[in-house]
Length: 313
Image (tube, rainbow, N blue to C red; front, side, top):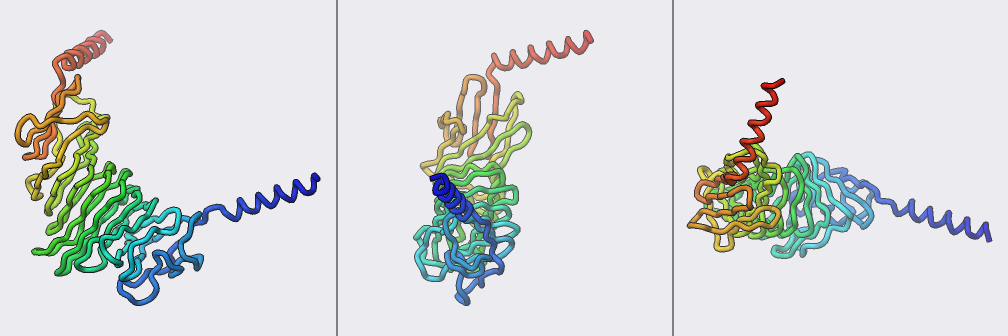
């Protein structure tokens, strides 16, 4: 009986070891056209010689990973997909059918619209590391759109690149974009926000939205002010000088904890949270914080006490 139990235990351990996740690397880049077999959900150029499968993590380091041409979008087979060191994922299948990646990690990675005149969708969730994520909609004489349905988190930033005058080069953020880095929009491109976008506000600095392109904000602006400790001050959140900014009828402003601003007058959104009066001006893109009188008294009293203690010493 003891020998039988030991055999079963050893067998279970062997199964556990066999099913531990492996890290699989792309050994060579896919071509940017229809030549060769793309590696997205095929054996292609993966180091283990197999199509992506559950239980494994996949890393593209500096290479181009491409989906199949003229095939409906599909779910990535692996547990995660990492794009690092200028790696690119080129979408080249049918448009308006989502590619789902349940754990996409970007650290200087890019999502690329691979075919002219098409709208590609990315679903799942995205983690943006310090190197950032790029949404590339091409520089050719054509229309291209990327729609990011996935929720986005992480400390890195997001940029919209490409652009060509007279054509629609657009990235739409339709999920909850809660990354804390900045957002940049290149010339002749557009960023459309229909979901929500977080801006991280800190003492003396903040993430922001800047560039030379266009911003169409028809979703929720979320402000994380949890690290703000200074007295009256202001932050430039949206570069309305260089960006072409349009606000839609669904635009709203709220703190990240859920407290909602109200539009006191056209273009001016306000919130009094009990200790601070917040005001966001859509025309200037500036957020202003004015402590309530009671908070100012406490701040002054605290400063005075600290000063007196230093003098006594």
